[in-house]
Length: 510
Image (tube, rainbow, N blue to C red; front, side, top):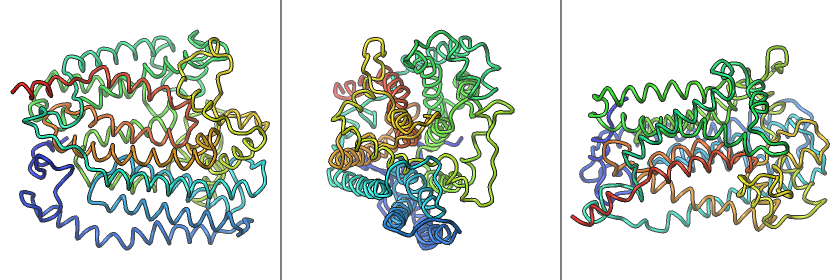
């Protein structure tokens, strides 16, 4: 890792929210000018590739798809998401949450469903009429436009700028307290050790997801008809370990003094080994491991625009080529699904990308029973309440729709658009996505301020929270929301517990 603190502080002034623009006073002109020339050289092929070339290649694939309204709407959505993703990649500012959002939309709601429409095959059966698919695509478009509107409104609202002398040395609203950070490390090792011992030792973490799920079910922490115990066991066994690793990674990345202290390096090595055990890709869902990787990369390179753009660009390639084959260790030997592919687009119509068709099935399901007017989202927000206490607690949206469809395997996606649709229909979908866009843009701007102003060490809590949320965005957008709420709540609890405002108050006393 390399020290980035000095170079970052040289590029930003006391009231800046990000790196200075090329040619700004006090900033090094070489790198911004070089990137400006590079971005102009890459902009045309990148935009043509995402917006024109890839959709055209998919449209030329042989298949039984019908070129009806769903086809053209899906093409528009794919090109729209491709253009927005290209904008994120070519931007002079790092927009973590917005960039990951558009990468997910482009692949999971754009390219993959477009391939399914062209080829005429979907990963999950569509039980309703074709019009429900048209409605689903249209609502995703509406949600994306609302997301952009929310982000635009956030960009027009100025951030409250605080000078270090008046408001303390922390760049964000809270910084990591050193003593509490050590307690987080202690919690990480204690909770993960309990998690490992409860499941029978380290060996099970290198077997398969099927085996580890069966071990959790037999561990005695799962009450009948409730997954709360399982969620807390996994959550506390994995999340504190990841957060502690991220904080120490940032400390080493931004502090030369920390890299010269053997105790800090040894703690980081121990945390890395712990995460290789409890957060490895063999025994964990691919979306969770993707969260770990994205959060770690952004924490290790907090100010690198090149790393940010590489993650977004490589994510598109990885989603098409690597991700569909990354569940090799999901099943035990002999029960593993075989992968047969005649085209690079075949996995997009036969495996993971069921988000659009599940939105269409959710619309059909809601047509038979009506909207729930907040009840489904309340179930996700109150995920920690056992079903023994709340007998009518809503189940995962994907599970409910799968049961209604009569499927045996109900581990189905429920993208965030569907969660809003189930409760409040068109208004809820548009309004909910606008709020998400507003919050994402504000968080991205606060993150840029936190990274550029933070001193050596862990620094602002937001400097760790934003990369973690960016990685977890894949899980939140894919859904179901009830499954995603547990780890997110544990992460928030840990971050609040280690946050402090003492440095800010000390700044006022000076």
